[in-house]
Length: 407
Length: 155
Image (tube, rainbow over all chains, first blue to last red; front, side, top):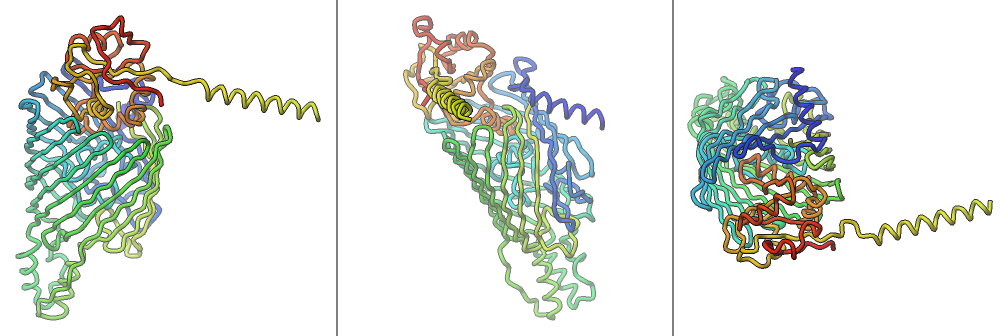
């Protein structure tokens, strides 16, 4: 543990010294570079714990938490020629086991076919939503953390599979279309009672279209995920008392139609516009769920910032709201209908956050970010909140301070 | 008391004079030339084209479809000035931009070259190479095998 800490601090110091300005070249063909975040999150509410992603354990957390965002990663890029190449990325971060874990987040073989086509085979970042492909590297972001509402459902950070992309470099900018397919290579935690849910082997595929030029970048994507193994928390048998009239019918209705597996589609659109010193980003995602496990919903965020030399203050507004679902009746008894509708309502979400923050550039490779978030949850705020006390009113304040760096 | 007031007035005048001098003296007033191989088919680029090339969004340089943008590693001041004037971004923001692309395996940044001598050599050797040089490092009479396609000036 002590050695890890020394290595981590050394990387920070190296980065802060500005000694490592660019990717380190190990040989003519091999490059190595790294990134890291050292951060603390303060949650003002005693009645609930906060986790950054569902790839983190749902165990108890202190009000001041150094584990949510802190991480360090190394990226190797091997380019022996212009046709083939290989990349690997290893990451140490706080994971499901309630300790820092080593994760292989990228291991890819790349093939180029002419100037426009490129294929990838192996493990690579999931890119179902705007800028999702670099979600692990905090240095890439203007804000201190991805907005809670936008990333809550996006439990996938990488997939095992293949992709093919076509890029068109024109005088007006760059167009890219990328088609990918594979299997999820991530475990997630869905409740404190379950250590982890293995969503691996679940097929996922999608397409991403991107355009970037001068001050603009645009991205649109569609992806589909099919999970065979559903979280136990959603299991109807565990949530409906056996003595409920029509229990068997109710279970067969739920299992037969909605909770035996789930499929979800995700449509996403994002844009960034950066004229002069202004920084503007917006993204919206539409989840098309498959029943009770994942209701249809909309996630969105927008941020605006302005750079004054090394300081960039910004505002961030984000939200997530599921479509309201009408009550249904099985015609057995009012109690049966209540149980059914309560279960269906349990997956509803309605949350908004307002963030105010600033990024201060310490060197060209390190910056300090501070952010305050006011979070208001109106309906079942379950996604990145854990150990909720029944008294929790759904509102809380988060203060984040973090040092992001590359080396 | 009068002496003190007189002294304060003198200081005041000195301060204003100093402030005016600071405003008048141009800082980093040197022009930056965007330079290519003299045999390249392109004679002139506009600002958007230069941005697209240095930010990895275009591979075209005239008829050349494999452009090689070059960055100076050692002269941080010129590098910072170049990106500030070209895209209004600090070096840290440029690094963030490339970090996203590098860590997602999507693209590679301009080649980092240690000296201007090496940059000029690469410009001569590769028709697709493109780089920026401060006026002190580029003299048209001496470097006739290179040509300027865009000039960045202090606003």
